[in-house]
Length: 112
Picture (cartoon, rainbow, N blue to C red):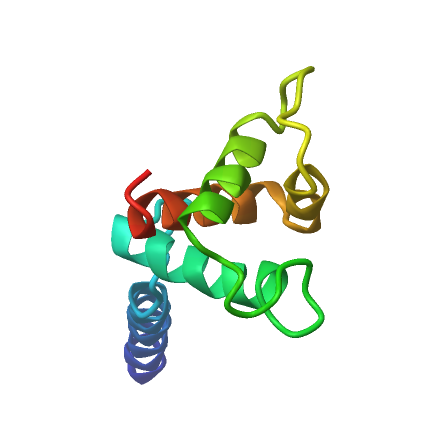
């Protein structure tokens, strides 16, 4: 009987701890992401991979005009015809999910 009690406590603890681990992240299980997280992650990716020292776009070089160029390149990534800017190449530095988050950030930040 004592062994059964210990086993049930261990099983309960494993299930409870696993649930709390999933609940502690900013991205929800199943790949869903809320708009605030998408904005935050898109901003971080933009300034880690596209706009920084040693990045394709110099610090301070991201303005509304450049954001429009990036947005157009991101939207045309799967199209046969590209906008024809250097940003067509720059967005290739990002993975598909990263491109989505950067696109979301640019649209919200610059009201595009």
